[in-house]
Length: 114
Figure 1 (spheres, rainbow, N blue to C red):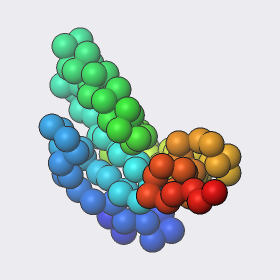
Figure 2: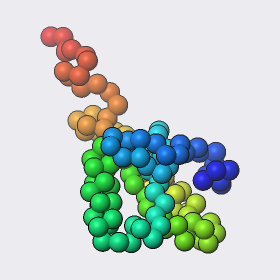
Figure 3: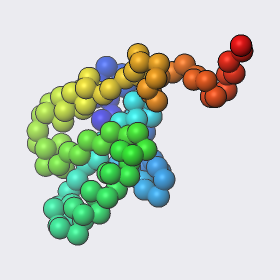
């Protein structure tokens, strides 16, 4: 992820998010990339990862898990997966009634005058 072909996007490494520490985080995109080795293949670790990923998603993060073997020997595949995750990341909605809209709604810092 360092000096990668991700069009200059920089990821922070080993970032605390809540009670967890994520491997890589692109803050602006709320994209987390986790590199998983053999310990993540064990059933108890998979359950822990699922709970962790669910919590992170509830906080608005997207979690992309990549196997260490793929990262080490997969050529450009890991970078392509990260690019796909970035391209498919939902942006702010254009629907002003959705919670993801950027404009403040009535009662959210702006008052309506009659």
